[in-house]
Image 1 (cartoon, rainbow, N blue to C red):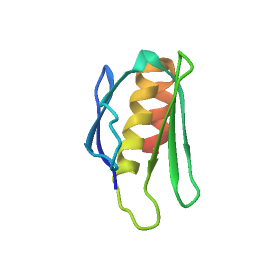
Image 2: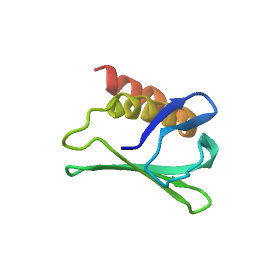
Image 3: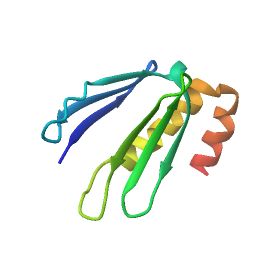
Image 4: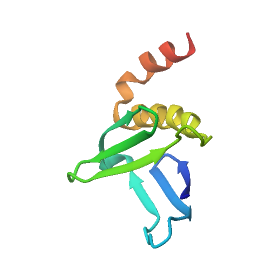
Length: 101
């Protein structure tokens, strides 16, 4: 099992590896809001979260699953809020109003 710790701030996302699969040597990631073009969360038993960067790279993370419990939904809600605040501030008031309704 692999385990990561994700944090969000006004600059972007930090993804720190806590535990990796045997033989995996991935480095921690720091992604700035300005580098992100779009994102997508795909579901279907096993979930795949994709972050599309402006340079064409796509960062993919699996999460959840039938036997795993994670805090991804909490992260995703906050990620979505911060993405809109940083990338589309003109839409923030409309998004926030819809979210608290």
